[in-house]
Image (cartoon, rainbow, N blue to C red; front, side, top):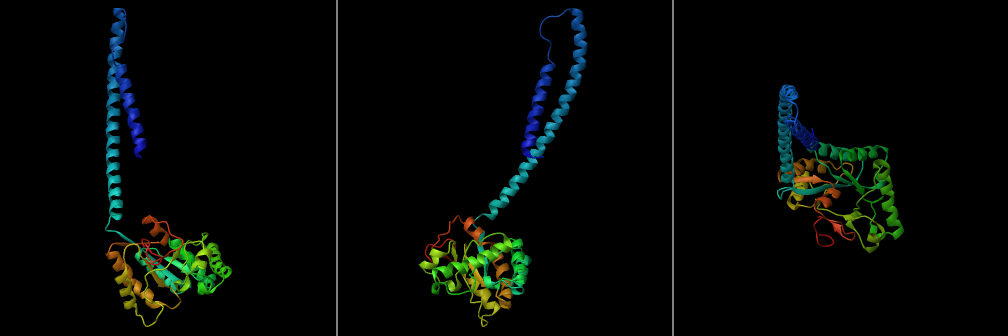
Length: 297
């Protein structure tokens, strides 16, 4: 029973007790002696009945009061748990992946997210979206991941015209909308290459991130994990790649994720990270950490 309902019931019961108690009082005014005797006998019987009813109502009130006490205790426990999570010991970080989607490595990454019960944000290349890879995108979205934009062709945006910049963004945005029913909320410019014309023609915030050069085969899974763990701090955005065949990054996740969890990091989407930190994204910054003061850091 909800607390509001219990309180209303107690109030109704209290009113009933008060009214019944009032009814047991002596009748007002004067009456004939014979009438008083009859009323006295009837009053005694009514009084016994009322007393019994009052006892039942009082018992019910006591039970309802116990329910409220128990409910308050449970609520306090939940509030305490939430306060613990929001304490200074808990740190927040966003895990992100570029250069997908595909039907192999993207799914391998999602397997790791499910294994550790976390979410991530995927920045897609529009030309990589096909019938098969779209299934991986939908799988990630259904898991609670955020789907964002990494252009159509992975071209250097600073070398394109304003019209071409918009076309690169819009193509991928529409593809994502077809799969998820949502437009992309952030853009990661290929090579993190931007200038004013790029800012002027893409109407969402820009994201970079701490990386591990994980597109290079010479960088082992162990090296990738160490690089991320060494850099990670509260409010960071981790930049990795789920390009097809990038198995060493998938392997590195088995070190990165549990180690950061041990350090009291909670993995959230990019949108959630800004919201938790109370930051309204600046449209002319490229965010590596949502708390950064400068354009790039």
